[in-house]
Length: 262
Image: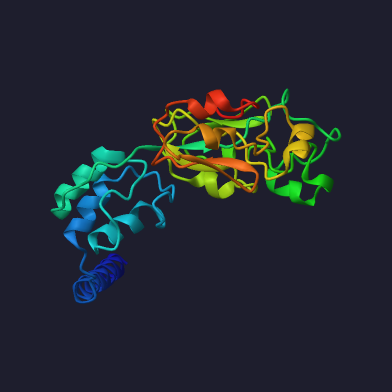
């Protein structure tokens, strides 16, 4: 009986040893070489896997940077410190980039935006496309206030306050997740230090805007005529700021009769 047990143990042990040797040989034969720089770059990335860089997670970005297919400063979450560390690994000089933040181009909160009816139902921004009038708010361009952007943000940097989405610019990493999630395309990335912004996205004409919101842009062009830097223009009945030209002088804000430039 003891002899059978010993024999069985030797057979099992021998089989395991042979399999282990075969796996070791196969591992060496079919091993995929990994660029050492890719490993080093990955160690510098924050690991949020937010997709803000345009690649499938931090692993994808690390591979792209190591292969020269992505710039060393492609990670919006890591910012300049991470870009500098990756630049050292890749042997590249890193240009100082502009810090960005998300901004919601709407101020139509519960006090300012008028409602056509009282809505009770599924509170989801994307579902509003199937609701008559695309929701209760009279402005068909304004923030719906149901938080699709809030759910998309991996950094808890955007919240619904008094019926509209508001960004915490200190917490925002400019990953762009909220930008792509807003069904009304109200969110854009602006320079972190930008002080003057247009808080409206309505393309309706003046009277329709005034009937829907007490703060909406009516396309009067007073801001455009006042700006000393040619940095603001009215397109499709709403003002847009060229942030590269804007010096935050505030002339457009002072000229706006609707106070929709903040």
